Every structure is written in C-alpha cells, then in structure tokens.
Figure 1 (tube, rainbow, N blue to C red):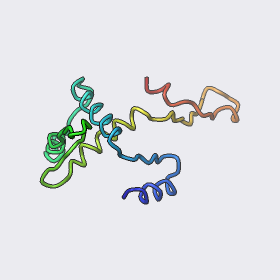
Figure 2 (cartoon, helix red, strand yellow):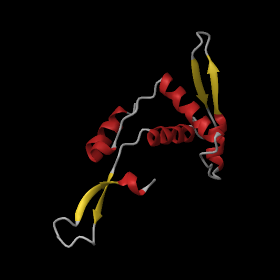
Figure 3 (cartoon, helix red, strand yellow):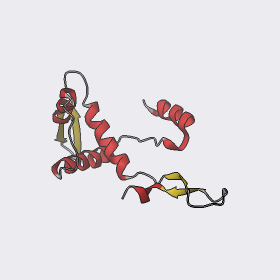
Figure 4 (cartoon, rainbow, N blue to C red):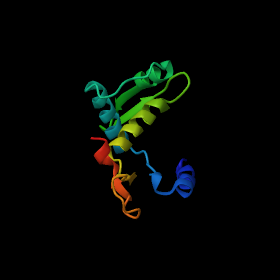
Length: 124
C-alpha cells in the first residue's frame, strides 16, 4: 500500500528516503527494541493522550503456529503512533553518517577555508 508513496518520496528527496517494508520479523525487532528503550529509560514520553493510548494499545499475540504477531487497536487508530515511534528508533539506530560544511576562519587561504567534515565529531 505504501510502495507508491515511498517511490514518490524517493524521487522527490533522493537518498534521504529509505523505504521500509513491514514484515513480521521487522515488527518484532522494532517492538522489542522500543520496549527495551523505554525499560532502559532512554526515551521520554510526550504528554499526548493519543500517544499514550497507542503505546498501551499494542498487544503481543502468539499464533497457534508459534509465530509472534502484534495487534493494536484504539479508538482512533491502529496504534500508528506506536509504530511511528518504533520506526523512528529503528532509523536512529541505522542512521548514516552525514557531513557538515565547515568554515575555518583561522585559515587565510580562501580556497582552504571551506571543507566538508563528518558531523559526528560535533555530536559526541
């Protein structure tokens, strides 16, 4: 259902977009990682009552075949806010390096004043 949206976003924003196909194993990985982040107190929860409802609304079910399935339903959504937060955590875990354009005012040569530097050195 979202393939066309991801293709359009990829055309418009290029490499900033990474399409994600939700399948059982990815959902399991993301749900348990989100739960672990909350248990380790690495995340804060906004005071939005709809977000709270979505976070509480997802239930883990084990099928008769032994597979894990996640079911979520609240008054106004299918716990989309839960999956959005889990997807955000997943993206943050796998983020790519990005670069910052640095201006070195100490360098008198105008051609050497500007250079690309890995931004991770600024966010340690």
